[in-house]
Amino acid sequence: MVIRSMWKRCCLAQDRDLICHIKTGFVLLVALTLSLSVIYFVYDFSLNPVKDPHTWFNLVNQTQSYNLVTEGLSGKKIVWNFLTNQQIIQTTTAQKNHISVHHHVAHPSNYHFILDEPDKCSQNPFLVLMVPVAPHQVDARNAIRSTWGNESSVQGKAVLTLFLVGLTGGPEAQQQLEEENQQHRDLVQSNFVDSYFNLTIKTMVIMDWLATHCPQANFSMKVDSDMYINVENLMSLLLAPNTPRQNYITGYLMWNQNVIRNKKSKYYVSEELYPESKYPTYVLGVGYVFSNDLPKNIVEASKDMKPFNIEDAYVGTCLKRLGIKPSRAPDPSQFRTYMKDSKGHDLSKVITTIARSPKQIIEFWQKVKRHK
Image 1 (cartoon, rainbow, N blue to C red):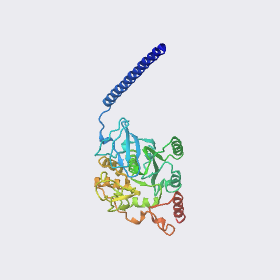
Image 2 (image 1 turned 90 degrees about the vertical axis):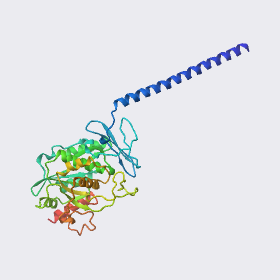
Image 3 (image 1 turned 180 degrees about the horizontal axis):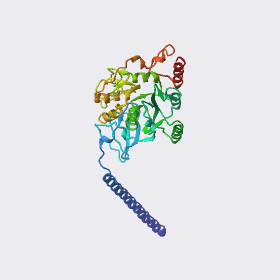
């Protein structure tokens, strides 16, 4: 019994010592971790300069959240957030500080080109048709390539058609896109997330490409991938003696349009991003043509304009800042949206109209060619 009692006391003492050692080790481990964290924070903060709010920004939408990582000309990575709430938050890959930003810059120099065709304008095209399209919409691109996008010379003037896409979302899709471009040499790809809420970014990248890669062109057109274009009629408009060669933009004009404040609408824009109740007169984004001096000026104006997700209205606000009003077409009926009765309508007289599918683009094209 005495031996057992002595053995038990000895074990208890050893347990106390072990527990003491464990507690001491745990305290030292926590202290070491906290010390390393403080050192890392001080070191990281000392190496990160104060961010200029003019170099990055976030947009707000009402339904989803998109994180958009970009790399600017300086090589610094930037994140654009499309948030579900009304708080505008700035975020960088180095740190995430919730700081309200009151000035934003919608400027395409935040992006670079993954696929590019820098020599396409070496033949001095008179007209450049730029088609924003989703990376996966191969059928739409092929329909255009086999119809109006295949015209390289109209009324003796050189015409160029290019497709602009954003990120594909995966290596397999990217490889397919690159193989497609090797075949057709008509794709321009930039490193933004390709989504509906980024259409303003997409349009500004188009403007930047035109300004930097093709300033010698006379006219350009931003035209959606679901559009039928009668390039012959478009060229007749551009060659008319009364068509201006500078500060000119025309298409389907939108007058006196209210800003949508209903958060359930995909066209919703907050007062923070656009405080006025109505947009200035702008040209419907499905297809508008402009003199090629405008892209550079629009990009410049965008430096001081808050971006919002209604891309055609945003271009309209940039034009208003430049003191430029969209022009009414000599025959406004040539710029159409959907046709109620495409079979009974004379397609040979239109410049633009919306097709309901790639197949219908081909049908419209064939119909006009048959009646020539």
